[in-house]
Structures are given as C-alpha cells and as structure tokens.
Image 1 (cartoon, rainbow, N blue to C red):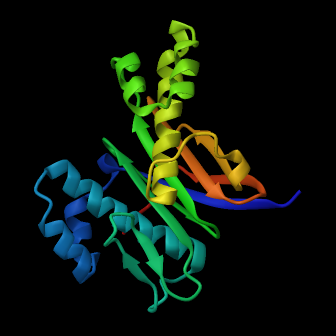
Image 2: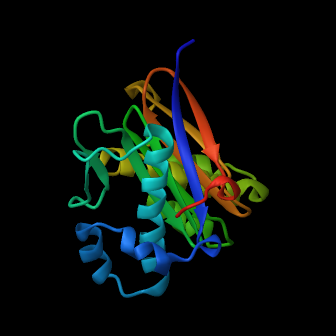
Image 3: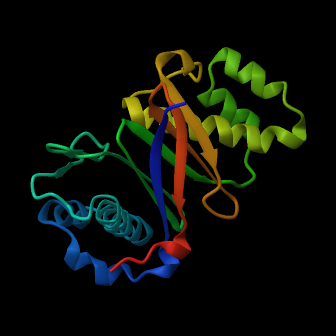
Length: 207
C-alpha cells in the first residue's frame, strides 16, 4: 500500500537560546516579532521559525531562494516552485513543525484538568458532544483533547472550522505524544496510509 510520509520536528524552548536565533530571522519575521510583546510568545515565534529552517535543511538540504514564507493569512505556508507543505504549532514550551508533500495541519496541546463538559459543549457539534458525554469519566480528559487537537489540526489545514466526520474527503489523521502531558494531532490531504517520522527534541539541534 502506498504511503505518505510526513516529518514532524519538535523542539523545547528550554533547550535553546532564542535570543541568539533572532539574527537568523528574515526581515518579514523581524517585523512580525516586533509586534509580539509577550515573552513566551516571542520565544515560541523565534523557535518556530528556526525549527522550520532546520526542518527544511534536514529534508531538502537547503532553503531555496525562491521559497517565501507567507503568513499574511495567519497560517504560515511556503510559496514557490517545489516548496513543501508545512504546518507549525506550539503549546507552552514545545514547538512543532510538520513538513510534507501534501497539505497538512498540525496541532499540539498541553493536557491539563479543565471543565471538559463546558468546553466540549462550546467546540463540538451535537453528535460530537453526544459522543463525548457517552465516554466514561476516566476517559473524558483524553477524549476532549483528541477532539480539540483534531479540530485545530483540521482548522489549520482548511483555514476554517470543519466537522470531525472528514474521512470520506480524502484526509488521514494521526495522534502522537510529543512530550509528557502533551497530545498532538496531524491531518494530511491524502488517500494513502499516513506515515509519521518524528524528530524528538533530543535529536533537534538548532544553530
């Protein structure tokens, strides 16, 4: 069976000096960074852009001069001949970047105790919410974060909210755990089996 391989690179803010990475950012990135005032958001932004560059060098050996990072719509994407599809996500200290030959959406969330019923009612459609309420109490935390991350990943793929009943539309999805107490979901526009290649924080060395 044919497969679609997606590489996901993960980095931990604690492992890197984001201040030293600023000089590697392009002019457009610097302009965006200047508008970010929250310290953690600045670190996430810097690390995310540095991680993207690392991922492109790892997968393609170079960052083509014709590739332009376009984030005007709020969803970063690479524009240019032969440019791969990308998706970025961050939560607390973790930043993740997916690179694929097909359109992808990636979401990472830190899992903590919350009012899951109230939140699920806000983000779920009627059938999704009914399914959530049918889960045993011991499974509601995991169930909620699976719904949330998948919805966010789909949103990043399409740029708009979509129901979870999407499998007939030529998409594949996978969950994975990028760190302790973190859950991630990735969706890809493909009819092939989805194969994830994870690059853990311990294997990512940014310069």
